[in-house]
Amino acid sequence: MRPNLLDTRPPLATLMVATCNVLNLANAGRVFYPNQDAYTRAEYERKVEWLGGRFRMLNADVLAVQEVWDETAFKEALSHSGLRYDFVSVPGAENDATHQGAQGTPRVGMATRLKVEAVQSFADFPPAFQVEVPGLGMHTRFERPPMVATLRMKHGQPVNVLTAHLKSKRPKFLQDAQGRALEDKDDRKVAALASLRSLVMRGAEAMALRCLVIDLLERTSVPLVVMGDFNDTPDSVTTQLICATTEIAYDRSARDVALFNAYDLQGEMALKKDVAYSHIHQGAPYVLDQILVSEEFLPNGRNSVGDVRRVDYFNDHLHEGRDRTRSDHGFVRALLRVQMQAPPPPVVSGAL
Image 1 (cartoon, rainbow, N blue to C red):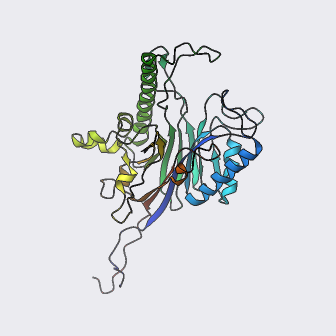
Image 2 (cartoon, rainbow, N blue to C red):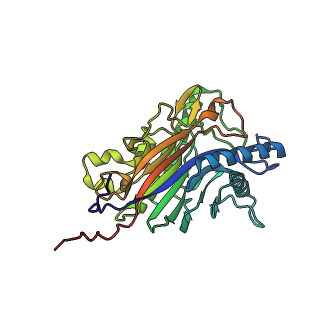
Image 3 (cartoon, helix red, strand yellow):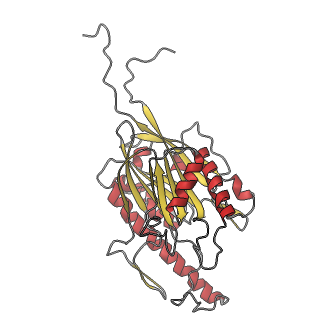
């Protein structure tokens, strides 16, 4: 087939992104939760080697991770992949002369081959968006602060990438300063209240994340990719709160600050498998780990600069039995395409 010399559509560059909940990635011998044993040296070596193999298989340009206790452990897992990442960061989990890794709860992080222009971690909710949690008082900050990186692709296109890990559905029982229970966990009514606390906390974090998404998208054409463990499904109230796609039906301007599930935007040639899940709870599969994109990745969007080529779920290990040297979450990867700068129009021979 002869090329169309009048085709002035800009070529597309690829951007591979992936999100991985790595399940308590910590250094050997380091106690991360009081009720869990530290990894032995052998367990640690198995874990970083296993993760390195998965990272190599994903081969992502941008790798978002959750549940990292020690940045050095993440770097070692990356070294086992054989891939080169010039930028690696897990804010709050640094290991140096003044930092001994994450304390109290694990953190989110990122590794990328792209040029990094800015990085910021957001701990506090906006002042006017704090929420009262029954029995706990005001919920004012993320338990695991989300991380935003402004990246630039080789052809010059900037892109913002955000990774987050929202509050789990695990009931939030009241404890004293020493971690002793202040409530009867066997009381079913108390358990219901504890589950409500978790829901309120996750909802508050989703609301605060929504505020951050609006700040990143409003009146700008820079594409945004949001990845992570949302601890809820794509159709849940909390995920929809973050995305706000339902508002598009009656407010055309809402598209500018909406997010779309990358799985739903895959091209026609993509293989949409029936195994699109990232976690198994009590025998049932769920999609908790998600990749969301802004309108710039809508194929026919008003401000489109690319599309979603395909989304893959790497979850076979979830059927291999529970083993903390692996992960209890599947990993999700999306192949995005972004327009390169349009070439100058060709000179057509014989034109007047």
